[in-house]
Length: 240
Image 1 (cartoon, rainbow, N blue to C red):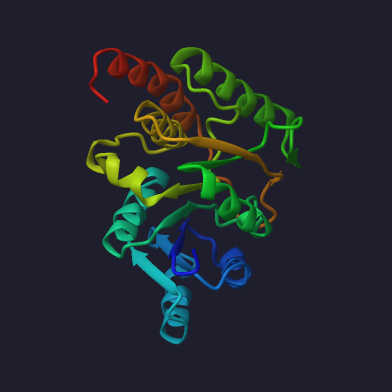
Image 2: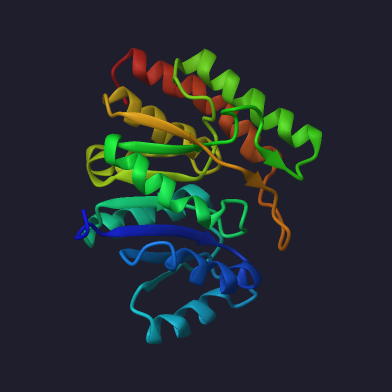
């Protein structure tokens, strides 16, 4: 176990304030952890800060992209990097402290008996802080809707705090993953489920960002509504 390599992928766009504090917090949780920042040409110079930090800390990695390309493609770039560099466990994590770094050891423990670990906001009640009621209801019922349409047996289908075993990502044709917003989370979990991998949910507390601006939009919501039907139809016809 001690030789296993862990990569935490964190997409960024204008997250300089958060990332300065988040990077040391994440690295402190396990000496095997490396961080990969995937930055979409942030105007606040997030990438410049990370690039400078990486010169003195080999555990900090950076992918710079030319413009704002979206959450899903950022993670796909990170997944391909992780496979190329032979990481064993690969995390998805937000840059804004809505995903608590203190939860990382729980993920590492859970992945020992699973292939994909999901951090769930809806186990043991609703574990979300500081969200407006409209946003909370949207998220909760999106997961219910996803479960009804796709049959995906998870409580929190749209959450973005995850840990994959390497073999899960190796089994998925990443070039065929087309969703880019929060439906990306649904698509990746659904594909892992349909391939028979062991999925485990663990409870997390989700805290709305304090600094920076949310990336949620109506376009992202529409994509998620449509994507669950696409996934169900592809599954029926064996096209996943």
